[in-house]
Picture 1 (cartoon, one colour):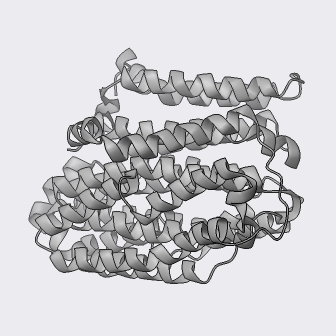
Picture 2 (cartoon, rainbow, N blue to C red):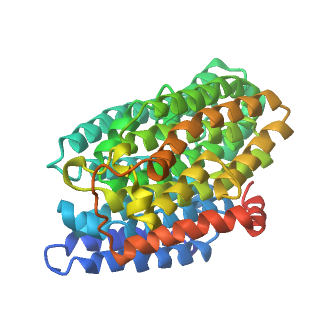
Length: 471
């Protein structure tokens, strides 16, 4: 492949993130004012988004495509990174990992996600997935004093490694049958050989591997322990960005390369999506640890999004992008409130710690109510808009019964969310938890709340952007 500066320009956001992350890690010992890494991370995130916007195009012989689809997902990754950085400093200082390595690992993880979103070659997507996964494994177990984090990180690593093995197996099957790793070339070959057992086996392997990354049932076992054990800003980040990266790869691989075999993989994906919705919501009902509750909630939301992928339409894919974007605001906002109230050794993580919160601290209680309403899908929040367009795309694709099942799952989901609201507003406080917030944490809460309300009231411009971002 001839060298071209255009290749480097198309990859400039990823190159920038890797360079900045490497410098953060290398100069951590030399820079004593650790807030420098926080501010570098914030400004670097904005600059990386600008580079991504200015670097659209096909590069590296068709292996990397910086298109509007990839840019929209990069916006979700960088938005999640920005909000997660804002809620990090006070928590990281208290827990003892306010270092350059922490911020550098977040950058490395986002770089891998970007490769997954724009890769049009299966090997590029695999490399991006590994870079993201290895960074997140370390981030989950970053607080070595917390045994829950070590346990969650180990489980995530072992199951994630198994998922990577499945992905390599699927890659081998597809390459052996089609002779190519390029998604467009695979699509052309599948028009001839979509019925071949090797191709179908490869598709199943890809479904299992990416199902691990998005916490699809029955491949969700790592999520509750990893979410509970990880530092809360890391949990917020991985619950949105890592999940969105998995769906970015799912959308591009299944709706582009495997489109000719849609009838086959839809029959597998639809039951798994329904199972994911109901299992996630039912298990969330019995949780008393709020991080585990939000973990099972995340599993259930993955089920909703899988429906948009399963229908295989352009409208369904656009609804997926919309849902993941609004999910970033409401889910990271909820974890920001958890960070506000959390203390050492897991204090502040029980849902009963929120009892009577509205009488003691009305502003955090109102913000939590807003995010819980949005996760439930109550209008006029952004969560309602996301679910409405997602369910509508399922109906328009000719599967109204799937939309009915999704609505029933949403009804079950209302209980754990509204239970927290009930504890905050309808119970007397029994224990005193004093919020300790930083200006950056309040800024994250404010931005999340504005995003939830603004998109819920005026979604028009976002819908227009989403429709122009699908292929």
